[in-house]
Image (cartoon, rainbow, N blue to C red; front, side, top):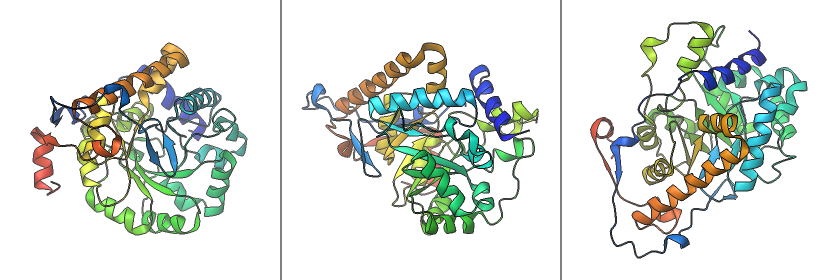
Length: 342
């Protein structure tokens, strides 16, 4: 199966099948309600800064696709909205355009989003195969601001002809961080980053961590359906997103992705320690069903929910939200206590 065909199948499966995890862990996180907020809701500031760019709210459209004509239009539409709403935008894996440079146009969005915070993307196993200059040229050609390196050992066994040899990944990533000249972000794809891995990523030079926690799109299911591989034993595999945020608090900025679906989820993620959040599948589905106006409305509602949550916790800006109190319950509490995260 070609990379391009796999990308087409990913879009089709994500739109047609139930591929989301049933629980995110956010239901076990409670922010403390403040009955006397002493704030004007209309004056609450949801803006923040990440990698030197100001965002209207701590959000990026997380990596979705690239490498096909269908992907080209999806990327253009969503990047244009990200530019308008002043949030970040993340490209899907650029492996396809490195293997076939003619596919570059399916990733290029600077014509519609000249100022957006733009994240490039490549897999950790491709970092081993491609020299740094080839990856750098791919970033330069799309005018990205940073590179996400997705680390996906749980996904690959369920892909037909997946990459199963992860030996040398750490040293290859370290070399890339030293040579690339762009900020490198270590990114999981839905199974979470542990404390041990977070420390290793910091040690080898990444500038931020996208925890890609368990709770959102489940790539074991997606690729298992495509390859017709039995995935049932691994549908619950991974570190829930709220826990992965706590696991990854080692002094680097955190991007929280994985099952974030509301402004309340964003607020909880920031309170736990994230700098910004990422959402992917809802944007793809809403774009398909309701078009660009539907996506804009969804972003507006996320901001509204975030602002109300900040109002109800007495936080007038994102910095105050980062220090607001929370309560852990259930399995999330048990995990945090056993791992000595709190």
